[in-house]
Image (tube, rainbow, N blue to C red; front, side, top):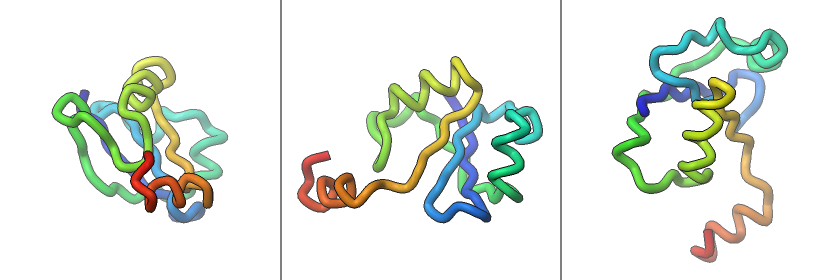
Length: 88
């Protein structure tokens, strides 16, 4: 599944994945208001990846199919410590 990834101008380290053929304007109004002006980071083919750095690829794919978007929040301090230790 091809997706587009945007970062938030208002929320640091927060990313929004949407299906490649979707429009940002089609997202829920509340999300658009909180998000601010979207900044495209990249397009990514999830089918060609086995993992993502900070989130579960199956969860991302499922949310894209069911809800039309996946919101990646900044990692917590505990998650960062696990990443540094190589346990995530």
